[in-house]
Image (cartoon, rainbow, N blue to C red; front, side):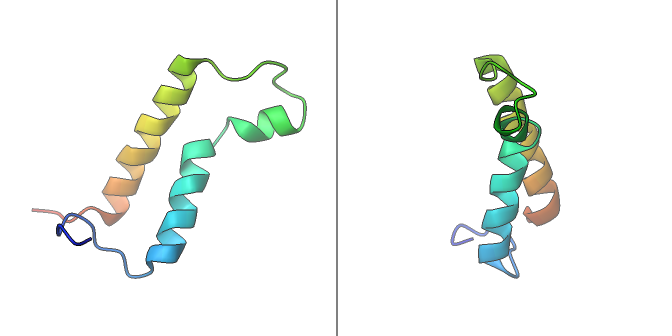
Length: 63
């Protein structure tokens, strides 16, 4: 925000949203026993990249 690259009306909510995006589809499967093994590094990286892309689409300053 200080660098002018993000527009966050509610930074606390945006932080919670980002954490949920970053964990989407990974930890709940482990939590409920649907994924017996931890996600692969590639899966974690792909999930993180998707989370950043979506977060920036919502909160990144356009232009």
